[in-house]
Image (cartoon, rainbow, N blue to C red; front, side, top):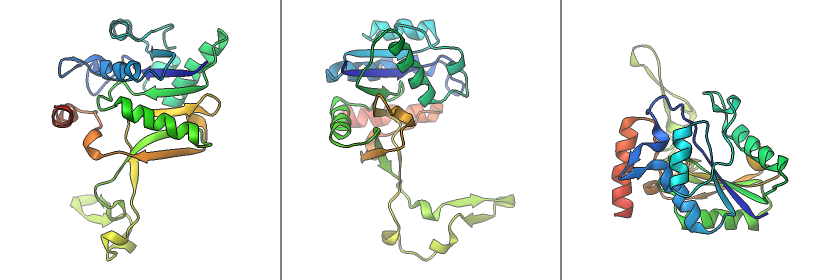
Length: 224
């Protein structure tokens, strides 16, 4: 078959209670990921992998399917995303359904757009790689990162760059935390990965209540 969208949304969020279905500017935050996937027309199926019945019901209300529940093994605090995807793949395979490409969209990624999904998919199909993801550059040179010791004593992680000009330092990037396009075979466990840069305006980790408020402000600014 063609493309599968997996939105992983377990119920046991610790730092923000019920984060995956918490109201974000008028609707559950997971709805943004589901709607972006459906509106892109890129997927034969948009499914939510969850261990939580309430999340499953919300997902269905916004047009996703929940054909099976996530295993207890992959729903605890130690489960990694790659294993969740492998579980979904293997469950589909057991019914004779094999998708050529998979896109994992995180459930707390309200900045995901149809254009970004299309850009990522285009890069995946044009390059011989296992996966593609959006990245964002660090706003400050990571070569000048500091560690704080006892009594607030500061030390550079890379003191050899103390006098290096900022413009001479290599640009560093981090995962935007939005989505991952991948081929079925290698998926996220594949070793060949490429990224494409997106603006910091559309990137926000959402791990604390302060993060949540900032994400809402950035969303209002970016999308009116």
